[in-house]
Image (cartoon, rainbow, N blue to C red):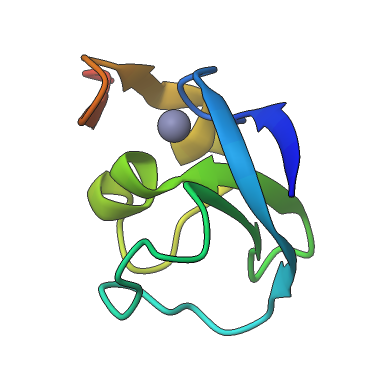
Length: 81
Ligand SMILES: [Zn+2]
């Protein structure tokens, strides 16, 4: 397991490894690490922690990732446009 930082909020995360090609929103129990790399429909991929994934919309874009902010150790949020 590698240590890295979330592309959204910038918090230090532990990477489960591999790229998830399927949007597994809400299906992970968090036991495999605190972040995962997601491949978006626009072809980009982003390393995101679970709090960030929970606040992203169903079809996230790089713009949504840029709006992510860390709130505390447990949560993230999307900045107001
Ligand atoms: Zn994050």
